[in-house]
Length: 296
Ligand code: PRT
Ligand code: ZN
Image 1 (cartoon, protein in one colour):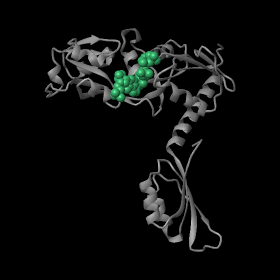
Image 2 (image 1 turned 90 degrees about the vertical axis):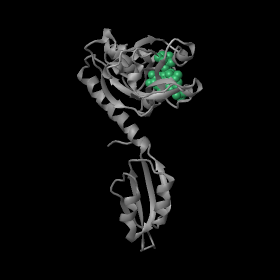
Image 3 (image 1 turned 135 degrees about the vertical axis):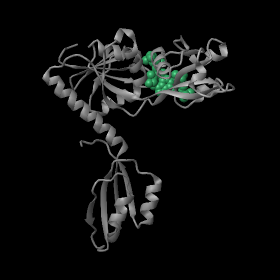
Image 4 (image 1 turned 180 degrees about the horizontal axis):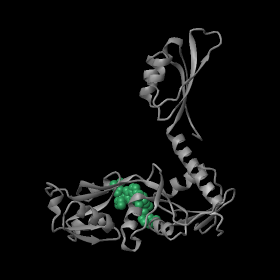
């Protein structure tokens, strides 16, 4: 691996893998995929992709092995709370809008709960001892943390803990184990982090370009291009209905002096309710198109 290439770490196989890879590919990076799937070479841009376990990514960034990494805030914050990472920091460049979950405190569903103080003197099972400890400390609660590497949700029914702190997205796992969520320890999503290695000027410029492209992909994802026909006197009313719309382009329509065509970019998603409102305001031939790329 050359020093003149950007080293990017993403999760090899798991919940963040597909979205992470898709994001980089949508930024225009083409990878020569190796069979072992550990290291992929960027064919058209100076990028080396490392495919690793998500838990390893913050450490690779801290050690300067990688320059950028996509990882959940949960894993990154936990790593930074570890004693071996004391006084270190990673820069969060872009929140990526996928991998959403929360680190939650849950107790057996039949147990009463009047507040976090109820956990005083209890045992809490978790794979996140750092974040759990920090949370307990912030609430001045003294409890013992039982560190488990997996299957945390079964600890209360096994009798090895009174409560758990675990990741939740839909809540199905908690319900299946007769647990109920009583507090939120951390809200998390996947984030693009910068590492600590000093980059030369050329790589720094490339990094800024790549981050700009990533922001463009994210903006494009939630944006829509809307085209419609409308009565000439309802342009303002139509513009007010469109969510987060840019100044519209208003074009005359051949042979229809009372009507205009309106084209505009909406920086938020356009839902059926918006279309129905547009229709009620006199809009016809309404088209909502996805935006593939965007440079602000
Ligand atoms: O092998 P590797 O170490 O890379 O993968 P992993 O098994 O540690 O991680 P993986 O792929 O499961 O998760 C990667 C990241 O996805 C996590 O660190 C989070 O940032 C994010 N994420 C988002 C989640 C979830 N949602 C999630 N629901 N990670 C785990 N879960 C688990 C949770 O632990 C629980 O067991 O899903 C279960 C709960 O899901 P619900 O829908 O039933 O609430
Ligand atoms: Zn992991």
